[in-house]
Image 1 (cartoon, rainbow, N blue to C red):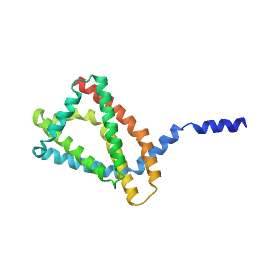
Image 2 (image 1 turned 180 degrees about the vertical axis):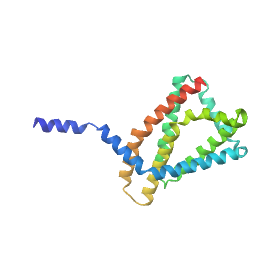
Image 3 (image 1 turned 30 degrees about the horizontal axis):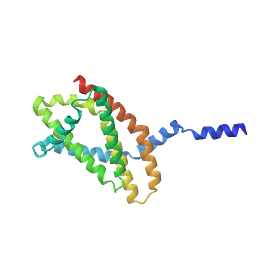
Image 4 (image 1 turned 135 degrees about the horizontal axis):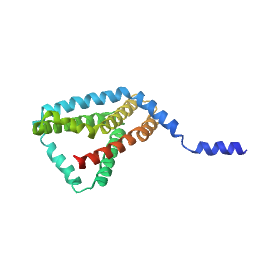
Amino acid sequence: MARKRGKEKENKFIDLGEQFSDAKKYLFGSKNYIYSIVAIFILSAVIGFIFASEFSFIDEILKGILNETYDLNWIEMIFFIMQNNMQVSFMAMLAGIFFGIFPFLNAIANGVVLGYVGSIVSAEVGFLELWRILPHGIFELPAVFISLGFGVRLGVAVFKRRNIGRELYGALNAFLMIIVPLLVIAAVIEGILIFLV
């Protein structure tokens, strides 16, 4: 009886190793969806870079973000970036339920913005200076790509009438086990770099 009770108590606790293993399986099972998001993002970034003059309205969006963050200290900046990225990534992933449309739109919008910013930076300080942007996105971009890929997978699951409950569980588990840690690291790096550069 004592052994049975011990096992029951053990079963009540979440096995993080098993959860992470499930998250990795879901991640690798989603690689084609993630690759499609990366391809759309890169194409959109190229468009944003080449046709930057057509996207000057992005300046107003960027000014709005700067106004929100200009008086934050580095700790507040880290939490602002973390909260913003997690919220956007989570909502974009869940919105994928609507046939995967929103993750693709998100990838296009973010790609165009990055391409536009890259064009402005290269015009002002030279193309080679773009490498300075790399540390800002080294963890953030993979996390965003993964969450958008999960969103597309959810949309396909709805379209093909798969077990959406199981798919949703897999996406949420992988979000917590993989995407959240990446976004935390990204926020810390980006928040510190903003004040160092």
